[in-house]
Image 1 (cartoon, rainbow, N blue to C red):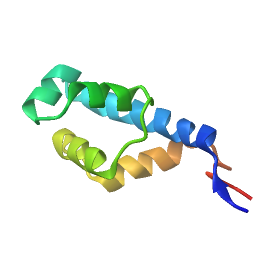
Image 2 (cartoon, rainbow, N blue to C red; image 1 turned 180 degrees about the horizontal axis):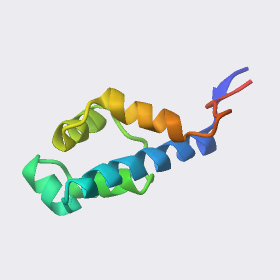
Image 3 (cartoon, one colour; image 1 turned 90 degrees about the vertical axis):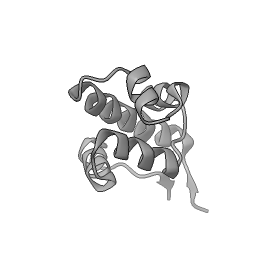
Image 4 (cartoon, helix red, strand yellow; image 1 turned 60 degrees about the horizontal axis):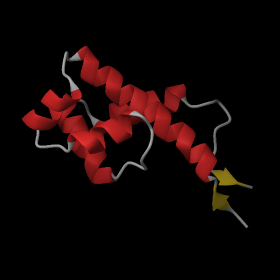
Length: 91
């Protein structure tokens, strides 16, 4: 039986959070400023950047819009940084 390994999923969440934080800092924005400017919850942004929450698609899309990046760019960068043999599904 195949199932998603939640410990492995955390690896992806942490890397995704690092990318979001890097993109935010690249634009010279604090979490508070970005959240205020784009009506995002600062606590949600903080938890995502620290890899503490499973990101919801709507949250990712909103953050990408706020950072003026395409979601595909975000996921391409995530794909580059994941370990080469990374898989969420235990076979």
